[in-house]
Amino acid sequence: MKLIYTGLSFLAIGLLLMACNSEEPLTPIEEAQQELLEAIQGTWTANEVRKDGTLITDFEDFTLTISDKSYTTTNGSPVWPGSGSFDFSSVETENEFIRQDGRLFTVSQSGSAYLVTIIYQEQNARGEFGTFEFVIE
Image (cartoon, rainbow, N blue to C red; front, side):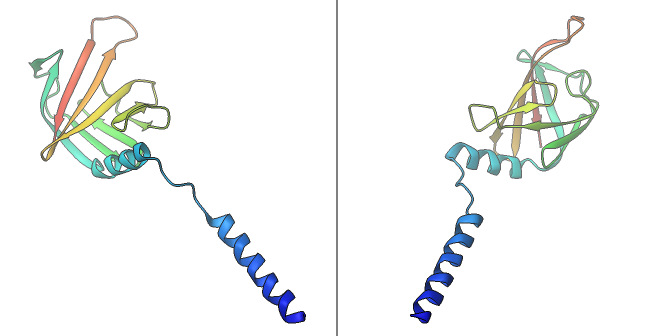
């Protein structure tokens, strides 16, 4: 009888440990977001920048460095702050991210390059608004 209680005790402890360590599986969108987030880690330079479909040179020497869910930029003002963070917990598709300032940007892959698109409108209405597309490699 003592052997049965000992065996049941070990079984109960094992089940408890398994239940405590279980993580909820990721949804397909969450998996795709994680993969994209891992792929865009690093420092990127802009090969070209378009505003509302027109090639512009306002972002010469633009760089975007992504580390986990944080970023730093050079020559990205006013569209990109010098640094910040982003997340994708409240977005609807796998390639959407929301910056800490509430602006949504998307990332899509084209070969070895990525297209980062952001709709930007300045708070002070100086006219710096539009859809900006950064082709980064």
